[in-house]
Length: 285
Image 1 (cartoon, rainbow, N blue to C red):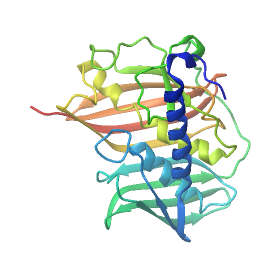
Image 2: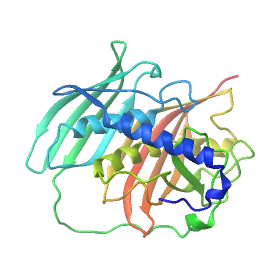
Image 3: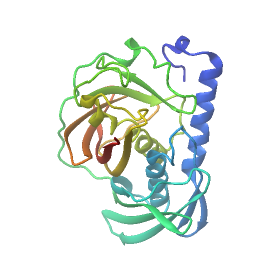
């Protein structure tokens, strides 16, 4: 797969980011320790703790590895403690229910003997039914937008702003965002891997939308921004190595908590997933 506007980044930068993607794919696949136990490692993307999207993706993969013939349609997770980037994470899967149409799993992510994350996930046997969706908003296409050259070498996702908002921390901006995203290289033809990769990507910038009206961002040393919970619904098939439009907004921030929600559309306008998240947005004196 060749990226548009590749010239914005030097070949060594593109190579580094592709290597980061391939490493992430291996991390998402996990090591199976026992029938319901899996172990994963972490990447350092510059955050003080394990990136929440990584834990989301790994937990989904662990749950799905215990399910036959059903595809994930929803997940609801809670971040309990900051993860240690240097220590492995053990994912303990509980088989709550195996049904003809729906299967349910509960996952607890453990480090140093303590739970750092818990998630419930539901899986649905594919079946036909009624269909409708909201329309994708009209935005400039990804090929017309410049690649964000400031993106870190460890980031395996290409993000391109479709709404013209200013760089982080430059000024205030409405609590909304429209961003194209895709992985920096082609992924294997594994639908579960694409779901886990989208769970990873969906956590990357969502809480930042709640900070925009206040001129805040994660790089500000006075800002403590932490995901508290994350919910996701998968509606239709998609590929995470094809362009997806991530439309997000934050309808409320109060009591040091910001609530954000998002819709993800394929390049041809299909609504493929929805996301909701509440996070801590605390400004230290």
